[in-house]
Image (cartoon, rainbow, N blue to C red; front, side):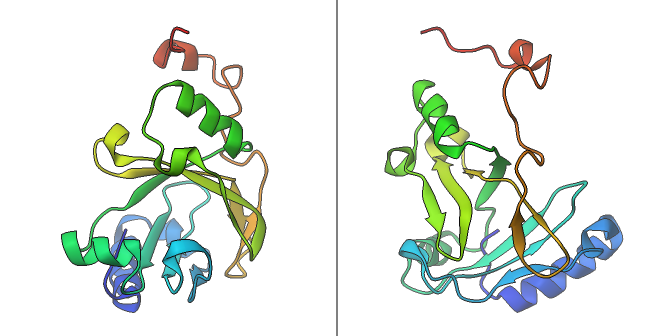
Length: 173
């Protein structure tokens, strides 16, 4: 979620999760106080990590950045949902083949501080509002950081989930 004040949002979400999903408070929050890559330099974020449920990531963008401009235009809002995969570029190629809107053509990004971390985006024109982040899987070790976790919660293909082909048929070529 994009928020105006990260510290206030963390306090508020701590109260919410204490009641609704206390497991999310068992792990240390992963926090990044100055993102230093790409168009969103200066962004701050915090993630409530839950290995068995939904993770909540709060993002405070820097003023004058694309995300900061969006915050000023539309206010605090849900920014994106994230799906993990071990092969982000291959997933993006499959999404491109499906004809989905991929900002930047589906370019894959890397974090210079976490060289294993790759991510890309499916645009809101295809998702009906919220961006979809496609990212490398990760885990926390209660040290306030993310660590590479190949295969963790990652979709590896139709063989992994027998009903997947029935639920989402492959597009005709």
